[in-house]
Image (cartoon, rainbow, N blue to C red):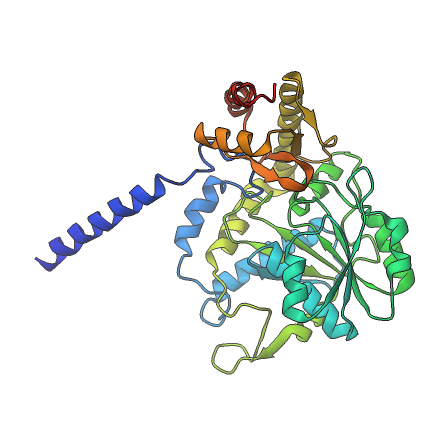
Length: 386
């Protein structure tokens, strides 16, 4: 009786949850066009469930999952051309990666100022508040990249770090990372690259011969890089990585941890789920380097296809896309966003550019774009944009 009763109760709960879920938009539908997160690869979904109970925050209990973590990190260290002294630290995403990097920079330098472009992610505002640090914003060029000519004059005796962005959230621009690296080398300043979005696409596109700025550790001035596998890595949420040029820097953000299986624990989080790490590793094993190259090349082809379809409607782009981020300039922004949502499509609003953002993620195909374009055209006509 109890077993039958439990199954009945379980069934009711699952049905209730399904009703809530019906209110969500889904990556699998292809109708989420503005997010920088991805529908996980099929193998990631299967692996995630398999490792659901694991916790890499207590590796003594899960040595197998810890080994998977190291293999996943090795894949990333390899394509970022990290030196032998380097190490990676699994984080929940770009925000935690940026916070952890600036925590290290502050500990190493005992300084409080961060020089960063106006396009920097909002996580740096959290950093300023959490760690009592001061942000010094550098204006952007007409190409929406950091104006490197303004950096040196903003360096002071209290400069803890300089930030470069590899794939900005508004237009997907890549700051001139090699030039910033050179400045940081000359001025002996900690250089962090926020590649939360671009970290899993730029290296593979460069391998294919694309002419994009180098963002890896072959540049001597780079000290840390954050990148998210749950974005262009085709992995499950949440999975980010902070890669450090020097493994010993992790000691700067480590504390004694007498109640778990390790004497010290690094980073912000205590409990860290092993499931997304195992899922991310499964994807890297499935795709490997060549698979990521093919995936990114296909994404860029669909990006070009989408650009042509949008501009053929008579709409203008904010700038020519460098990556798979298309930012469309409009006069009736709120009306377009809301009307598209009513028709079942979600694009992201970029208020300060009076534009909406479309990101061609791994799950977006040409048929999805062909389905979307007539809806966009209809919407723009309804609100008076066309």
